[in-house]
Image (cartoon, rainbow, N blue to C red; front, top):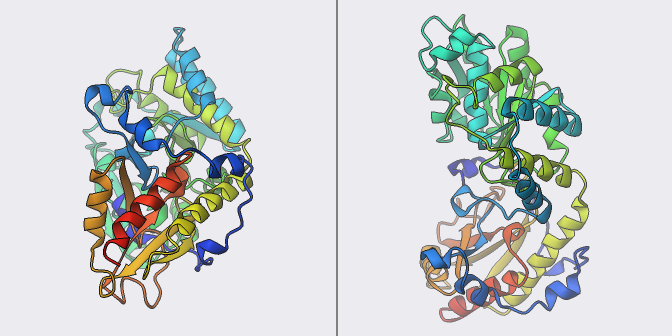
Length: 425
């Protein structure tokens, strides 16, 4: 999970989890009565345990370090079929890009190696355009536009993806500083979507300045689906390039991503990438299987019932909160991140003065138990308000992402938390 989660600014508190009605399109009766056998499934004989690698229950997020998301059957089937043929990779990239652009409603699209690959290729496109001499010289950018401007508050630890191209980053904090920093060497204005609340310059003003100055604007929106409207929304409001992860909310291959936007820039990104040799993106190779898998993931994502998915998340939250209802001193709260992972989450919280155990100790017990469980820090994605962690450092707890839980796992999470916390309550 990216460290910039601290920047998130969210909706107001929705309500106590126990008050959420269960109305599940996916079959709540079957889900509620699912046999709790996750422990045996995870610890038993499988492709990972045979290597000595221990699968865990993921209540953290669609995090890269836990493998992103679980691919649905449609995606796996597309990848399996794609693996049976040889094709021209340049032609496949072009045709799939056209198909994705039509599906999403944008000018152009390219399948990349995750959002990180999209950042590098998008940066390269803004530096070189489609000039093959410039493309072949990267990361030597002497004589080229090679400065990327970003807000200081938008630093996320992913700047290496920009610097790979041979650029240098110029940090600014205000619109006046941005205008002063723009010059003949400015190649791109980079904007971190989840950093919008923290920055002094908001999306619309950033775009407007880029348009007026004739500088391409790039948006990193890696984890910002759902809702599905966001796949086209940011291009439509004026960003020249936008990148999304393919292996998070879209449930595509973990090593895939989307670069969307202006056709000339997307075309330039494509020729900066594999399969072309002598390019900065040659090592960012997306296989034919991943390309077709991501196409299938997007096709599926645009068709599924997202309202039903939301109700299913509420159902999972209620199962956990009801399982924890009798733990003395424990509070639960539902919240929805406004930017990135925009689905219901459950925060569980206690005061260290009342319950003598720290979050890190609970986390260690959860991970070392059977099955291992990973949860998020309890202020991830929650709105800052009086009484929370910033006001009361004695508060402890977790954020539970129910999106990544599988049948039977909400009950396991509740049971394990209850077992650990009742010993100290």
